[in-house]
Image (cartoon, rainbow, N blue to C red; front, side):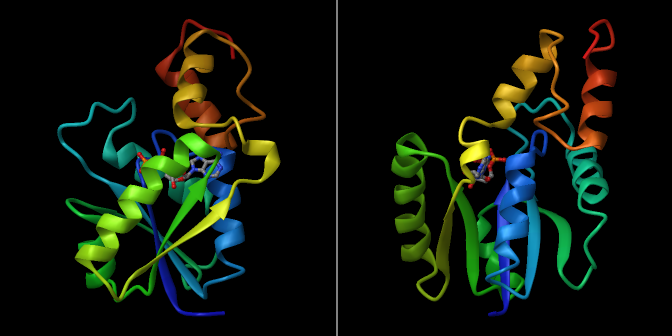
Length: 165
Ligand code: ADP
């Protein structure tokens, strides 16, 4: 077990794939900060406050000493440096994630050589699962209860009230 890692992302909305990564990240690190990116130029379904709230509700089973939910603006490496994190935690679902994450990790290493990017392969159950997929499924009124935690099911029902999820 080693130190603190920052798990950055959009989490728009959080899925069971994200939660699985948190659980598995805690087998490697003492403490995780799940850091929601605040990017004013990126259009999101859920506001920053909503995403923070959904993550806090979904991760309420963890002690604060283990998992903290926070937001950041700008570069994840700068945020990680401020938090004195030793690593950035990211997930990989397949080769399409790999290409993007590989370049990002190289750029981040250039910017912050002391900070490692640590990747966990997705659990096979969540290989196809993304926030984008969840939003699409929810918008069409199909069942999302096996894809996202209960607080996110409720939040998506509120966003798409005319649909029966
Ligand atoms: P970003 O916009 O930064 O990619 P996301 O919220 O989409 O933010 O993802 C945050 C991190 O979680 C990324 O490293 C992504 O690969 C990982 N992730 C997302 N969904 C899954 C999943 N189903 N299994 C494993 N990792 C995942």
